[in-house]
Image (cartoon, rainbow over all chains, first blue to last red; front, side):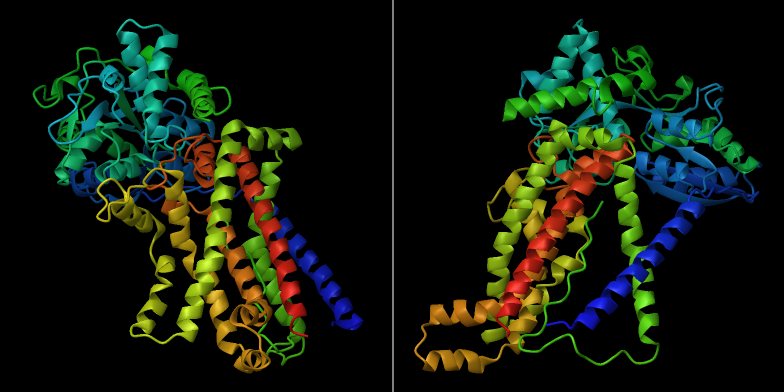
Length: 341
Length: 284
């Protein structure tokens, strides 16, 4: 069909093409690691996880610009999944102030040199808001769920985001684990409880937001979620109730400024720790980090509340539990997979 | 990672040799070629090369460890099998839909014709949400398949519908009906006419559609996140598994599994090229 001269011409183009591609590849590698610097005096680049978007845009940022330090400061905002946001900053997205769902997302930026090692050297150890892991139920809590143990005893279907694709979902797993320890169980028994709950999941959605959508769409009997997310869902008119178990984990959401952030970013972070700002957080469903401000009627402190530090801290937990090869949750998933087959 | 539609040469029009043709007006021939190569290099080849490079960053052993972990294997198996089922259904139903749209006349044909492309226009997360509402617990049609492997197939069918239809339609339109009439007058039955005359002419289009649908299905993420359940070893597809690897800062593992998907896509493309050659044989 094709004459030999066409063939020759084709192969010549092929050679030329490869050369061009090689050149482009080389250029890209040379240009590869660009760095970005953030500057801008009176402007704060906010990069945060998605849940507090309304709190920032409608209340906290206007609140800050009403203060002396914040007068004339402007904001650019970026919200998204916590891990994605952290990785974006690491990869060069310009950021002045960062707020994530998980300490390890800040640690990533400490490792890359973008956040100072001393970011936790302040009164609240770098934590700007608190919450707790709650159990979201159908209206009226028809299954009568009060604790994580009830999930197992009453054999209900549990929706919780996949702890590997959603860093924030790791709080849920640690809540079940720690609650079992609180009940006097051994570490092995606590892991068994986690395994049992995971075996009762019809769905492990990719993110907390998707999990909420799936639950509202009819999936499962209960949803494991942050208390503040449950409050947001209720405020948005979703027909759900939620229970805060007596034994549950304190969720600590960290914030920091980057090393080359303008003064305005530091001022903003300082503002977020002030009483008025913490009150705004509280109205938005978070628990203030300043214990004196916590509205105990709305946010009673669970009797068996524990923290991630009680379980060894995120560095240790991330390795021991969530390492995708050797972590105990990965192993437990594997066991479940084998049993299912 | 999303497996973008691979470059499949469009099926040549039946009965027309394709090698000869007019040259593009304006810029010179070699400049056009250079432009195409540069463009493809920047848009397709460079990112793909980066993924492959990354996947072997920890050497062959690292690559193998990443793709042979039981969870990765389970996810790959589900993805490939579901995609294969999807393309088989697509090949049959897509051809049938194209046939009806070209050969039959009925009221509302125009509307049906434009509905075909809607799955492309809909943001995939919306598709997933819609499927959950329609085929979930509170299904208005009383079909509850949410969070099952069937749901994975259904979601993939939804987003890959247009490929085969749109690849076969133009071939059917340009198919010379005289051939069929001649065969009929020579006494060939309907079945025989279809398999000996029509099908070989449509095969390149079906093959192209299959290849595109398969590649899309392998990499699909958005339409699956709500309806599939993502439970490891049960309903977790590769794209979501890859998402987990990225969240765990294991980019090498994520790239390695992506490379396997690319390789499977490539295999499919090779098979399709073979079918197209076979189809072209009947042209001469």
